[in-house]
Amino acid sequence: MNIILTSGVLLIILSIVFRKSKTISPYWGFLIVFLIMGFQEGVEGDFMGYKQEWQIFSTNSNAEIRTAETDMLWQAIYHYLAPVMPFWLFIILMSGFECWVLWIVCKKYGSREYGWIGPILFFFTFYMMLIEMKALRQGLAAEMCMFAYFLADKKKRGWLWSIIIAVSATFIHTSAVVAVPFVVLQIIMVKRERERMDIEKSGRHTLTLPLILVAVYLVVYYLKATSLGGWLTSMALIFDSNSLASYLEGEQKYLNNEVSPLIIMYDAVMVFLCTWFMQRTSRRYQILSIAAIIGCFLDMLLFGLGSLPRIATYYLIYDVLVYPKLTEMVSHKYGKPVALVLTVFLIGYAIKTSLPMIVGTDGPFAFASYHFVFSN
Image (cartoon, rainbow, N blue to C red):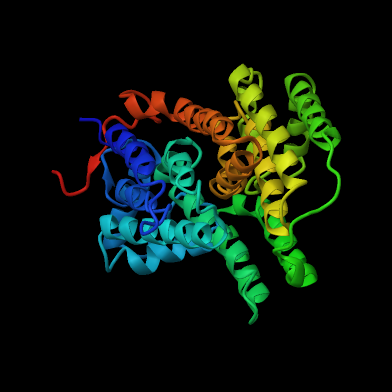
């Protein structure tokens, strides 16, 4: 039995059944996400590499691991935890933290009416749950940055803890530096507009800005398909070998890969809808919409660059907040049938990104060999 696919189908069915429940949180689906992430075993790739390194550290706390020297917090985790707990327990604890962050953030800022869409998107969108099951460091860093975003709203030194957590995430995985500007933006907006945080935007809105951003998106796509590859190579060469940017140089062999037309269509539509939504919503969701739009650009821009698309996770993760709230606004303005079409569009595309990997048996991104850690 394909455990991930079965669990995903069950998640969709139960989410639809419980979507109008007043007693069950719309974000209960993150419990299924936790079960899949926290009790995983048998999937090849990065996960098994981390497991092997953990086993080495369990007997020799002074061993060296493959991570860069700057990822010192991850090395500290190996150094102090591997000798005192098994790897499966560490995965359960780490996954529990990640799902807890998703839960509390969605519970505070998410949609009550359409919030059930969020866990489904996280479960099926490839650069969310599935990639975090393999890229353990990057997954932990992404949820730490989301937690930093959450803490920025706290009145008592929330901004300080937010900065500490965001910076700490960069010492788990260097790529987290791409999320730090968004966290800083959130801190600035909270300090300046706390008293207006829940006030809806008013005034006349046109389609000019959404259309402009879609045009910019298409121009960036054109540049990626033509001259941007050479520019990325030049940029990579000016950095040291351990920097994030120099990682681009090692991935240049993928730059000639064409972006899937489906990615272009989907992200262009979402850029338009998120911009439309941004003009009509509260300050809170204006910031989140910016993250979602950045995620769309990164999804297109980094496609075909080996492991670099994982960087988009730091912004795509906020889709679990924005897209349900967007669907809610569409429902209220244009009716539930239109919202249903949007829901099918969102979930259908998410499944499209992951289904080949969920049912696959060969290659580093195959998940059909998944089984629970205690099933052996």
